[in-house]
Length: 577
Image (cartoon, rainbow, N blue to C red; front, side, top):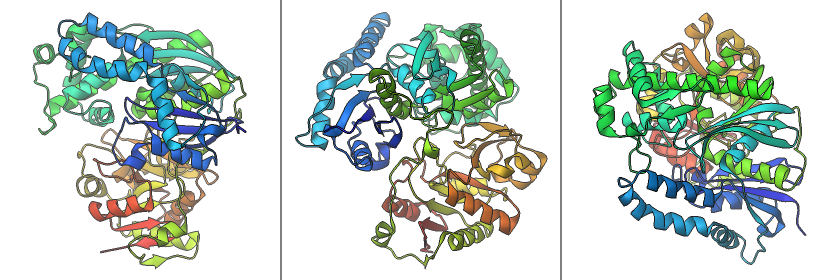
């Protein structure tokens, strides 16, 4: 007998993931495949993520009412064919090498998914496999878990099947898409092209352009003018028209190197060369252009829908600087962003669309954030810790004792790996799989970037702060639980939190509520009691080349390679120095 659960899947492009809903539409579990395979941004079928969410839901494949895939393969193949035709003859080699793979995989997607599911639950009867449009998946992931009964919906990314940006409206159980922009015209693809031109990886490093942009100088305006004059135009409604002489979306790069060099008078940066001021200026120009497009899209969404609240998803919704500006512009009364806004979040959106639209069921709850603080991943118990190959130095008796010890270590300058409870869903570490440090030391940021995270020196860190004290340090008037907005700092914030403040005086902020994450809140309160400071520097527990840790075993392996001062898993403190 089926239990009414719905499984959502994203796969075969990047950031494969799985999400499971119960019969009421509540989120039981969600996780990215990379956390299990340890292959960053993997696009493989999320077998281990599916196994995890089914275990969490105490069900098998046969118990499901539906399996929903996050986009429509035939529409995607149609775009690939038309793109190859439009860019011929330049696309001939690309088409010859990729078309057979896409044809085999996309036309047989339903069979392929069924076969993979039967491997997971041998002999299982696979329920109906549904396909939802990519941007409907994003829209569903943004609206249905949001605290709003009705809202405008803005979804912006590189490209789904055809759509690159969409505006919709959500009311109760219903979502209607009102306006779309289609490929190849895409603010997300433009931003990815700049990412590639500046020597970083597409679909992985766009956030580096966001961080680099703060270092842009006066020449950034020069590059912005050149780009606006020749590469594209941003229309009044926020849509973008690309001059395709400058872009190449069918090859190994995103841009026409010759055209960019002639226009900008600079070569594309190689990934192993220094990041000079020129690339900082170009990053700033791209960020300003993206923000301009997003503000116009938001105003258009307000005009089209008449809604007072906005929800957003799609990869561009992870640009927390643009999100902060959306708040500042006050186009909407309130904004809610899906914390797993990228393609991984499409798995959750697919499940929600299947539950609410295809099966006609009600949303789980209204008037509340239904994401459970994003703590939707695997957890562990003390037996798992006891089975680790190393013995903890200290085994605390309770959380109060633990938090006092860790707060003391942090105040003494230690950098700590912190692994607690269920893993976060989405790209941000929110106090379950985090590296924590004292933000009061201006040298701490450099130490973390160069020695521990082994990443570029221009990369900023986030601040986790007690929700009740956030306005002391930041110009903030709302909760920011998912680290998706930047805020300017107050005078106290600039003095007290130098390691968590970016060069432009902003910080990516996570406000921590007692109800959502009681242990992390207790640690912050212990640190405040000891130091008078209510915030900690919080970054994801991984090096630049690996996914965020999932299990205690992952944490031990990373701890040995990262130069952390100690590792805390549950009530156990490991210190091998």
